[in-house]
Image (cartoon, rainbow, N blue to C red; front, top):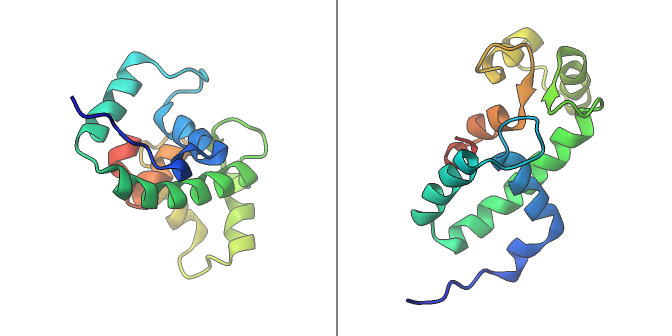
Length: 126
């Protein structure tokens, strides 16, 4: 069996934390077997070098998500989303329309996984 070589850039703490938060789909701060298994299935289909490019985008997304998730709930509630919407100048689409698009499960909060799916990181967010 051939050894897997992981690019050093994927081992940066910010990349690992972003990936952990993306894989951990519930608020318990632990990665359950089913969450890990879903990620492992994705990894079986992925080239590490493709993942390296995605990790940079995921890390940036994670940084912005944490910046605006001021209560640390793991979701952007309306007030947090409004702040992000205004600071980033996302005024091309009305705020409620953006919120409804991003809140895919309709729980009145936008998770990192929901944003990741919209941004094209669906395979990692499932």
